[in-house]
Amino acid sequence: MRLLWREHRQGQRLVLQADDGSEEEVGAVRRTPRGFDALAKTMGYDPGRATRGLPSMEEAKRFVESFTPWDFFAGTQDIQVEPQVEPASQG
Image (cartoon, rainbow, N blue to C red; front, side):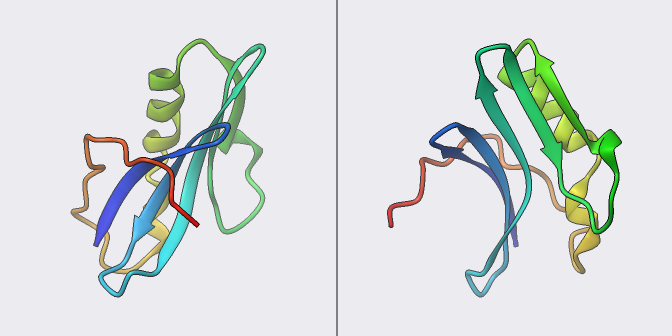
């Protein structure tokens, strides 16, 4: 299982990739004219897991990772976010 940031047209997405190749987006950061918006996915409604106007991509990514949104999935207790950002998917 892998946990990685992947480039996206408007920013980056945090992706949990299973050994069978299936993927689940668990967070995202989007570049806006006012800074960076960050969102950590949840199974219910939790507005505290999103914020707007952060000053940097790195700060926005730390915000998302602080919620460990991958914990909703089995087998992710000891998983670490990979340090390299993957290029955008082709296709």
